[in-house]
Length: 468
Image (cartoon, rainbow, N blue to C red; front, side):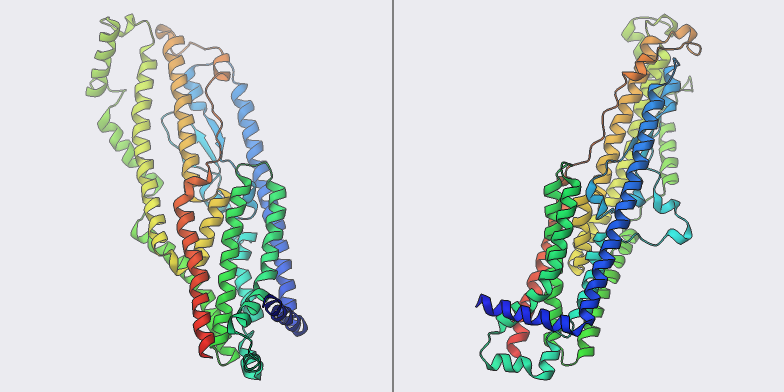
C-alpha cells in the first residue's frame, strides 16, 4: 500500500519535471526565498547594529555624566532597546511599525520610537520581502500555478478513470498526489528551520519558538496542498480549477486579512498619542499641582510631611522637601500615564480579540499570528517590553528623587551638585524578551484554525473523490 502511494508521488514528480514550467516555477520560488532570506538577514543585522550602537552610546553617556543635580539627571534620561530574537530574520512582525527604542525620562511615559516604517521615503514603503511572507503568500501562489491541473488533466485524458478501473483506491491516489506536492515544500521549510536553528542556537527559547513556527508553516502548506487537490478533482476544466484556486488565494491571503484588520480598527479605534497626552494633562491638573501653593492635594501632602517629622516649617525638615514633592509628583504622573497606557493597550487587545473571533476565515492570518509570536514581534511581546521599560523608568526616577531628598541641601537646592557615583549605582535592570507564553491565546487560536484548515479540505477531498 505504502509503495503504491510512493509510486504515485514519484510519477507526479516526473510529470511535473518533464512539463518544465512547474520545474521553472519551483526554481523561481527557491530564488525568491533565497533573496528574501538574504534581504531579511541584512535588515535584521542593520537593525541589531543600530540598537547595539545606540545602547552602547547611551550607556557611555550615562556613566560619563559629571557631578550634577539629581533632577537634571532625571531629565537627561536614558534609552532602552527592545530585545530582538534571531527569529526576527524570518518574521519581523510589527517591529518596523512599533519602534525599538524607548526614551526614559521624568514625568513622561514615552512610546517606542525609531520605527523604520514611519521614517521610510515614499519609494521605501513597500513591505520587506521576508521568508515568512514567502511561506504565507508566495508559496501557496506558486503551488497553485504548479499543480492546479494535477487531477483535472488526468480526468480529461482518462488517466484517473484508468487508475480507478484498475482498482487503485481513491485515498491512495489522493495521498500520492498530496505527498508529491507537500514533500518538496516541507523540505524547503525544514531547510529554513535548520539554518535558522543554527543561527539562533543559544537564544531565548530558540527550539520551542522555531518548533511552533515550523509546525504552523507545515500545517498551512499541508492545507493548501489538500485544497489544490480538492479543487482540481472537483473541476471539469483546467481554467476553472485555476480561477477557483486563484480566487481562494486572493480571499485567504489578501482580502480577508486586510478586511479583518480594518474592521477591528473601525470597531475599536485607538486614541491618537497627542489626544491621550492631553487627557492625561487635564486629569493631572484635577489631581494636584505641586507648583500651586493653594492646591488641596499638595497642601494636605505638606501637612502630612510636617506632622510626620514633627516640625512646623519645611525649612526645619531633616530632608529636602523639594525631593519629597518630586517623589509625590512622579507617583501621580506615573499613575495617570499608566492609566492612559492601559486604556490604549486594552483597545489594542480588543482589536486583537475581534480578529481572533474571525480568524477561521483566513488561515494566512492564523499563520502570521504564530510566526509573529514565535519571533517575539507580536503585540503581546511589544506590550511586555513597554511594561518592563516603564518599570525601569519609574525605579530610576524615584531613585534620583530619593537622592534629591536625602543628598541635596534644601537651603541651596539649585546650586547643589551630587557625586556622579550615584548615577553609576542607579537601578537600570536589563530588559529581556518576554517568554512565548505571553502570546498563548493567539497561538492557541491560530493553531486550531490551521488544524481546521487541514481537516476541512481533507473531508471534502474524500467526498468529492468518491463521487467521481
